[in-house]
Image (cartoon, rainbow, N blue to C red; front, side, top):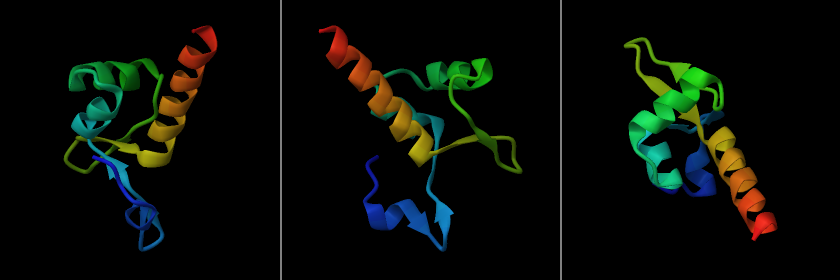
Length: 74
């Protein structure tokens, strides 16, 4: 899922992504995203139902950081 800047903030709140959406961005399994959250590699929010959600800005920052690290080592 790719959100436009208009979708990123709705009613002053940041867009939250599901583990599946984050996994799609990183091209990994959703369980990998959950392990990253458990290990503290990426922050998550728990919904009242106990599901994890991830802040889009944090996810995109991590993705950019990892992409830059790969670019520098190539």
